[in-house]
Image (cartoon, rainbow, N blue to C red):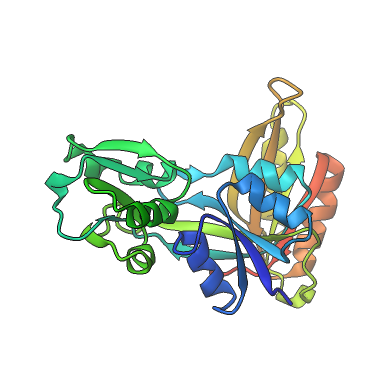
Length: 275
């Protein structure tokens, strides 16, 4: 049973919200300002599991986190999709015209780019965490400074929301994965999604052949992401997510791809939260 988790950010961040929704409010949360620290806590057995954002519906994959999961041989044991609503907030009794600087996580600022184009007087400054900025504004009583963060953060740190849901695309979702140092132990009958990685030779049609195997074995490809191999220029690793109805179909595809591809590696076998 998972009793403690590491998150990137502090309480009030989107990772914290995921911890409350995926587990429950009684799970112990360890706050980390970087994903490297999140992984470090997990590797040193300071927590039972970790929560990591992996992709966003607006800005795409969070590529460094794929590398962290792979390089440290972590296992994805579950996933959670969170509707991300970014709000501009500041100390009470201020207007947007009063705000000179806005701090937030780079991903949050990127997702709100169109909103800030309408307010060119505001200087945007990248920071480590959405909620930590909100906390800092409240703690230091920073006037003329805004944060982009969750509604939970505004409530926790007594900030006033100046503009709600300022992200460019109103339906803005982030997929988070729950990772451990050991694989999931849920029954095969409950597993209907998997993440794995492989490498291919530079041969015409090599990737198409693998994709045909997935299709022939009745697997649905939901995600494919390529990452360059740093030690081998112009060679790539492919990270793939698939869903399936039958675990036997998945096992068949897995056994074939292991023969076709190089450095095949299972990153996780878990339950598809979309069902």
